[in-house]
Amino acid sequence: MIPFLDLKNINGQYRAELIEACTRVIDSGWYIGGNELAQFEQNFADYCGVKFAIGVANGLDALILTLRAWKELGKLKDGDEVIVPSNTYIASILAITANNLTPILVEPDINTYNIDPKKIEAAITPKTKVILPVHLYGQLAEMPEIMTIANQHNLLVLEDSAQSHGAEINGTRAGNWGDASGFSFYPGKNLGALGDAGAVTTNNEELAQMLRALRNYGSHEKYKNLVPGVNSRLDEIQAAMLDIKLKYLDHEVAHRRKIAQLYLQNIVNPLIKLPLEYKEAEKYQQHVWHLFVIRTEHRETLQEYLAEQGVQTLIHYPIPPHKQQAYKEWNDLNYPISEQIHAEVMSLPIGPTLSVEEAEKVIQLCNSFKA
Ligand SMILES: *Cc1c(COP(=O)(O)O)cnc(C)c1O
Image (cartoon, rainbow, N blue to C red; front, side, top):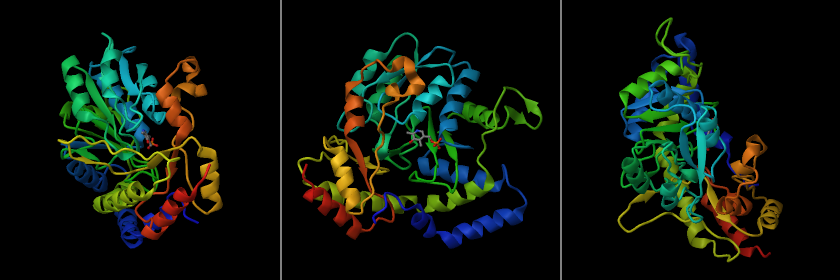
């Protein structure tokens, strides 16, 4: 069987180092808010090229607390509008509605799957305060264009970088484009903990301080609560696990890119549309291939055929956010590009331990598929 993503194998590569770090934390007697967190935050900030990284409990909290911090700092108020892609994992949108802000869904470019910058301007109103681009599947949204629009209209930018640790355009990485960026270290993400974890990156010190307070009951100083915060901390064991895995991230991304190039160059079945790596002559782009997402009008039969031949595939995602029961009030709205993407996408196996032989088998099966 070729599994979609083999987390046991991925973490098994670093077993000895992970156990050693766990032992160190156990023996330290200090489990929350210590040196392991401080060191990982510094190393992750350096990796992204930013001044500050603030560890939190998960990726959703990273997004929720950043918007919340902007409310506490007087930059946002209830009912303000946030532009977000209609094609995203629901967490990006939950972070907006959880803060009593209004999501304005903007359609993606069908080839890159990311928000279409040409459609952002038409969605801007006097109430628009934030653009929340999502770097879906490992590829940065078209950040140079998005930042130009944000600057012209004086909007904040919150990147959802949960799927794109290390992705870059012209040498600037995910997490260092907007005013802030939310990352997830869910085990299946490109940089994954052995449990839940997340972080916010920013170059803004005031925001960093507010986030450090919000994640810890709103306390800047022990037992002094300036704002009503929450408990959303990244614990010492997960920070220690992440600090080890961060060292190997670029190496793992290089392997993902190699597998992706094999797929892109060798899958030639006209029934299968391959993902497009967004390229303009003057731009250098690094896609980190969190997911390798193809499109086909024959998704069910292709998925069954691959499963019969021992290849596991997944669908990211089967139902668009505006068709979810959680957002009943939007169920009648039409976002045809997003709907088409959700109806046609399928993710092939990709990951740091998928072998070239396994990728070749996936390619051969994709090429022999008939509708
Ligand atoms: C995973 C993910 C999140 C949420 O991260 P969690 O750590 O699971 O809370 C947010 N946005 C996107 C695009 C994601 O893929």
